[in-house]
Length: 56
Image (cartoon, rainbow, N blue to C red):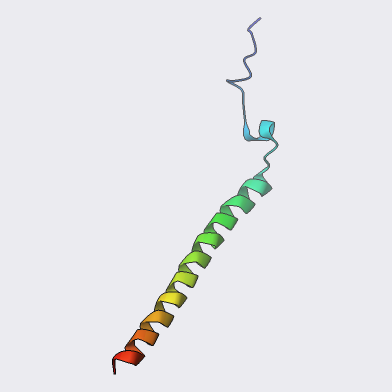
């Protein structure tokens, strides 16, 4: 009989992670990065417009 090595037979469900939680984490990372980019663009356009208004 072979010895069972848990390090070789370790999967995501052993840590309590389900497909739903993995999917939610991936979607949260994607949405968070999109939100950061959108806020950055909004602030960049705001300060760009503010600076252009004072140069005239």
